[in-house]
Image 1: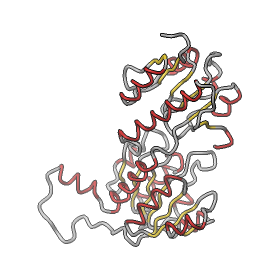
Image 2: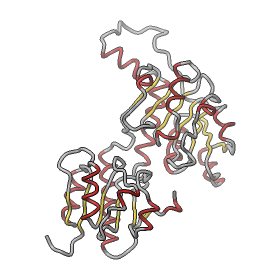
Image 3: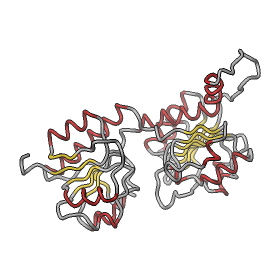
Image 4: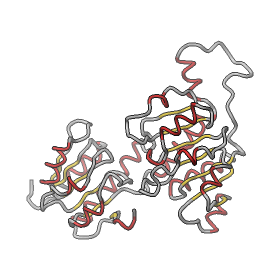
Length: 328
């Protein structure tokens, strides 16, 4: 390998097209199997690489960064969320951090609508009945769900993905409401015919469906805690394709089991793969294995962003998707 090529370590298997392009441009170390790196493997990687390409399954904390070698100058994250990276410590050590924003907006919004429909129309219950061979024919009162047209959708977090959800929900005839750190511009509100709620509590109490689309930050941890969940109507449904930590999962489980919330559609969980077993048992809860961004097109576009960030850095410029602590 030419000595002037950047040493890049990739922590997980990526789409073949992305790995091939990385190999063409850089002195890259790829992962043989699709499993997360161990802590010792991550330590070895940060000691030897110029650039680390991690994913959300890698904990890049202060302890790990403290063992980084002099060569490590860029963490080019494969993904938009960077709550698994200690960005402040990286900055203190002169290590840049970049991410891949924007490319998964439509895919995640599509999955949000899929979960809304799955819960309100009881799709998994019908699927399970068919798979068990229990269907005996059509009946007027069987598996009655609810029509989503005319329902009030409350969007918690009206960024790129929240607005993409609003755009889709309007096409389904839903009424758009939202709570955000900052109110949107008037023309954007008019585009969605959206109602802004300064008070999250007041919005939650009036919604038929609540969609969580805010990032994971210290201020959003358990934003939907037991007190706020109790504000929801017993007929309401909650959907989360953002970050699991935003909802108190145990409180949500208790309230759905008690009939205080009508159902939930979740693609993310508070404790990663350690999902509350009582939540799994509920027929009115749809659980997916973090599939919101799982399209081939989206994953390749993520890789292209990683490539662009590394290439720009290699050329001596600021990566276009650099993340700094003030953005978090």
